[in-house]
Length: 129
Image 1: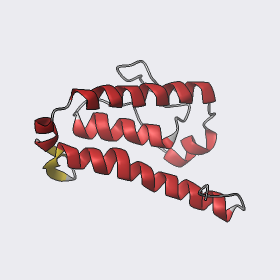
Image 2: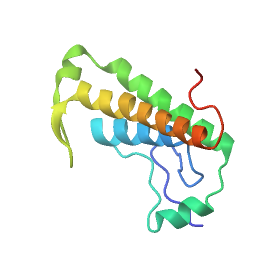
Image 3: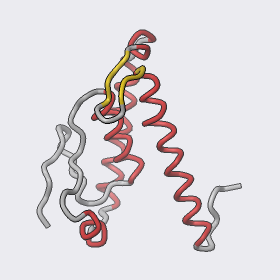
Image 4: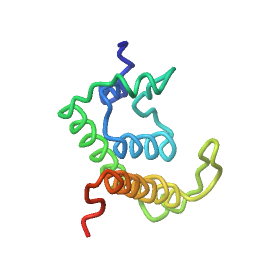
């Protein structure tokens, strides 16, 4: 398998990072900050997804780096920064706070719900309550 280019932190996504970390990376870096995020697998996504080998250690390191970068970025924002209107291509204009809330919080909660539902239909406990 060809190795896709690393992002500016030297991180690669070919080993299947946890979906929430990848979503966070894409939403915050690409949409809100207008920076390059980790490359996505190109071409036949199904073929890639069924052949990928997960390196759990590398995936965890990727997630840690993504969440640290997000935390560091959020720590730099003032109330005025959060009120700034930004334009996210394909989505439109709204405040930076809106896109951070939708992308980094609500989108992540959607994935948690999906994972919980999948666990439930397989006989495992979904949500821990």
